[in-house]
Length: 184
Image (cartoon, rainbow, N blue to C red; front, top):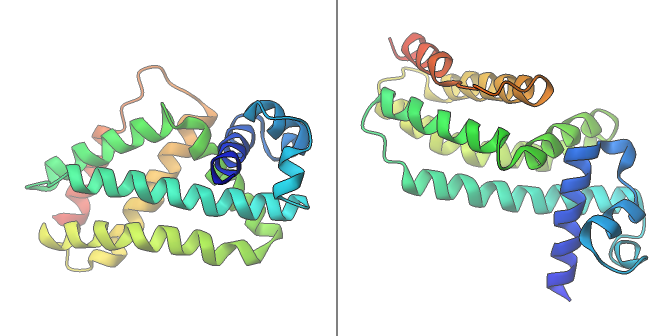
């Protein structure tokens, strides 16, 4: 039963991220999940509940990814940190393109449903802890603020790549330049 719910949520992320919020319907999610018609509505009684479920599931998946990247990355300097961030952005806008687009769609949904903001904020804050720790280690006088700037830049770069995909996408030079500016 839990596996079927996760299957539906994975499909919901895929639909939201690849087809947009207007196409997020029970029927579209059922079809994407390859489950019998009505399955999504059995788990989520209304659209708001479906979006809440997608948001919670997305937070779990993104936290898992960040934990994986953080565990695999032990940058020795700002250059290695730039490489780690670059690889993450390429992953987020490549293999996990739909998931990243779904997150941006949820940001927009939060403009109409402010109750989504705390969950979105918690997800970002968790990751900001790791980022601030790395930036402090590399000499940032204001690691939390610098991490916010880095994340805002990453969001902008990811959004631009999703909206205007470039085959030769390489955020590395911009990331390195930003980190040089922040870290002196």
